[in-house]
Length: 163
Image (cartoon, rainbow, N blue to C red; front, side, top):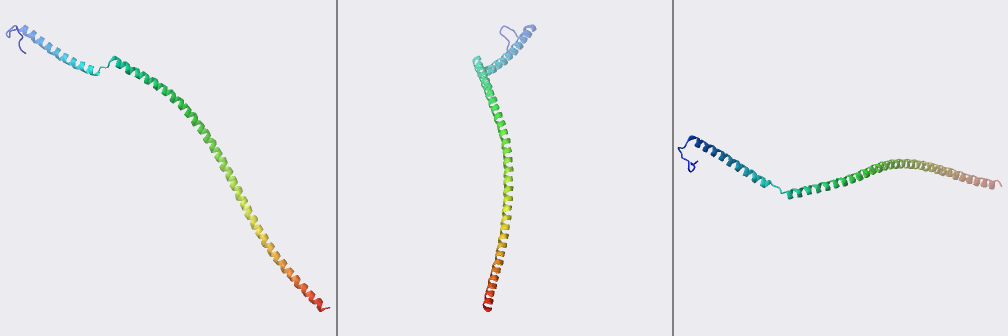
C-alpha cells in the first residue's frame, strides 16, 4: 500500500504500526461490507412483500376452508356409500337365500317330473302288454269262433245226413 500523504516512510515505528493496524482493520471491514452486500442482494432476491405474504396467507386460509368443506362432503358421501353397501349386502344375502330356495324347488320339480315320466313309461309299457294280451285273446277268440262255426257246419251237415 502506498504511504499516505503527510506520512514519511522513515517515520516513527509506532505510527507505521498504527497505520498497518488501521489498514488491516479497513481491509477486514471492506471484506465484511462486501459479504454484507452479498447477503443483502440475496435477501433482496428472496424478499417477499408484506402484501404478497398476506395475499398468500389469505389464499391458504381459503384453501383450508375449502378443504374442510370438501372433507365434510366426503364424510357425508362416505356415510351414504357405507349405507348403500350395507343395503347391497342385505340384498345379496336375500338374493342368495331366494336363489337357494328356487334351486331347491326346481330340483323338487325336476325330481317329480322324472318320477311322473317314469310312471308314464311304466303305464305305457303296461298298456302295451295289455294291448298285446288283448290281441292274443282276440286271436284265440277268433280261432274259437271259427272252430265253433266249423263245428256248426259239421253239425248242420250231419243233421242233413241223418234226416
